Amino acid sequence: MSRPDDFIGGMTWGWTGVRGTWAKPEAMQSMELMADRLKVNWTAITFAAYQAHPQATTIHYQEEPTVTDEEVRNAIYKAKQLGLNVCLKPVVNCADGTWRAHINFFDHDVPCEPKWSEWFASYTAFILHYAAIAEETGCEMLCIGCEMVQTDRRETEWRMLIDHVRAVYSGTITYNCDKYQEDRVSWWDAVDVISASGYYPIGDWDRQLDRIEAVVKKHGKPFFFMEAGCPSRQGSEHLPNDWNLAGAPDASVQRLYLETMFERCDKREWVRGFMLWDWPAIMYAENEASANDDYCMYAKSGEAAVANYYSQKVKERETSTR
Image 1 (cartoon, helix red, strand yellow):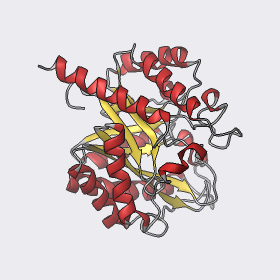
Image 2 (cartoon, one colour):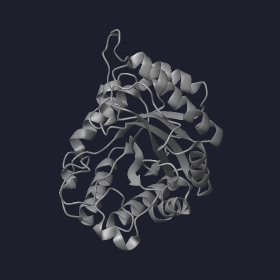
Image 3 (cartoon, one colour):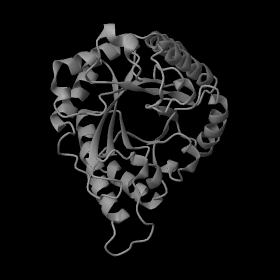
Image 4 (spheres, helix red, strand yellow):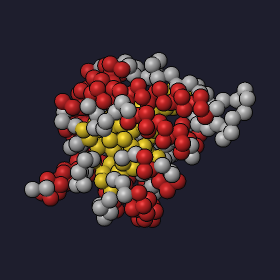
């Protein structure tokens, strides 16, 4: 995002990054489909490393099931071959299934209890490892964290981490805060771009955009939605962040949600784009699309909504820069 008119028409690829899957020919075919069918100009190459539980202080990023460094490099090179800008997005998850937003420790150290200092030491090593790969492979952006809600208040540690990252990575740095948290992060001035997960109810976009706009204006930073999307499932348009919501498959729900999100955000010039959620490395068969109720819009009506919108935005940008 080096120019004020840059637009991110992106898609998240590869989640959760299970070792071995990215090395399969099907994974590279999946990325080719993503570039061709959605008309993206960016992708977030995204994978998870694991700590045992929310109070564990060691992140096992070189162990299974996390993808290998070779798989990460090859995915980046493939995206580059397809002409895409790349955001490398390493994410920490809890192996016991607890959402990463609940990783948390006492604010003040207590003997014999796990400590923030121990966790941030491991997290810093984790992020710096991939920051070096991002620099080596020419990734345009690095996302240093995703939806780490309970960690957000640790301003000093995040600022120190960003300083360490800048020593090894020369590209754009962002942090992906969780939905409803945009106005709760106190260290946005330390990153280059503000980004957030935009899973807002279909009828609530204007109110949430009003709230986020105040944050963007305060900090004077570019902004985009690092995650956004909706399952193709009845009822999901009202609670798009709930991937377990019960409902029958319905592609029209996803299409309407995406079209509404694009239309409402288009009225805010400060929204620089989207990195939609998500496009798996191993794709379901095209003839199974009608039964798929997940976020991916491959071979669903939402696919055309994305491709049309992204193509339009890129054309607008090209026209404005002539």
